[in-house]
Image 1: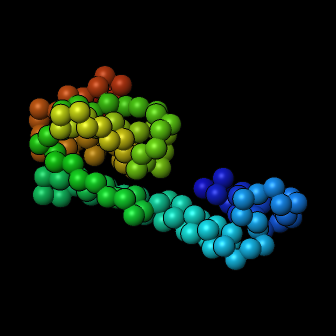
Image 2: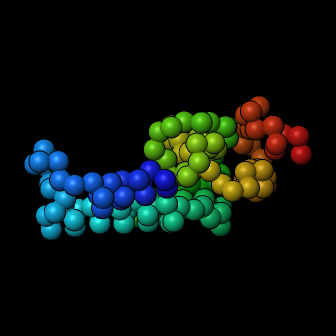
Length: 136
């Protein structure tokens, strides 16, 4: 979130650099594009969440949606992948499901989330790195 604020402050306080940018800061088009991008980033930041209901995990991240059937989950593992995912933390839970599908998420209470999934699908393999769940 800090980086978003940093870029907004640059947009507000840094003067035009002499026409070197594709869309200038003082143009209406530049302002509209910046507002749309900032709005999308805020929507993703505030609108990321996961809901477990009816044998499904419903994942939302701003305008993006995904559904995972709990019965199709094969493995849960810990990851620190920097790649884009509907997760607001770098400490993520990687879900392998379907034939080759992978989703990385970052639930607030990882241990309870795993317990809920394993209750619905006891065949899920739990990675050794998930020590909190394995020790409880």
